[in-house]
Length: 147
Image 1 (cartoon, helix red, strand yellow):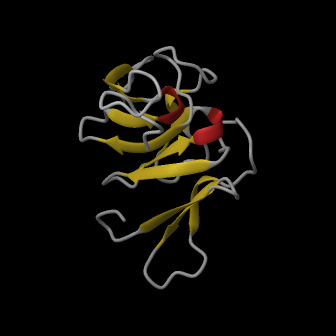
Image 2 (cartoon, rainbow, N blue to C red):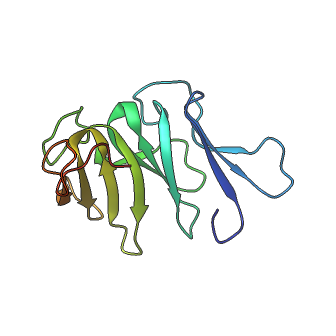
């Protein structure tokens, strides 16, 4: 829910994000809604979302291995993290899940299949690993699917 009391819902099977006001029955599509795909106006299993004070919506686009930013009223999103196919390079994500965006526009994302958490400063072409799970495992210094 954002500061204006809008509720944002990710429908990963419909590949869209909707925004609802209190009492709203249908909501408004604010990201995706053009079927599953990799176009800038599409999503492929969007899981986690973050909405800022300007009603900009950030989406972890799970099967496109990217984080998308959708400005209020936009018909297309902007790739702000990943988007270079799946992998473990600093320009890539593999199963992005939970995300947070700070007031400077820095994106923090759980890169689940890579067992790490990454930080992408605003405008960056690559991220940095801020918490490295040291591979998948049960050890105190390892992750096993961070979300």
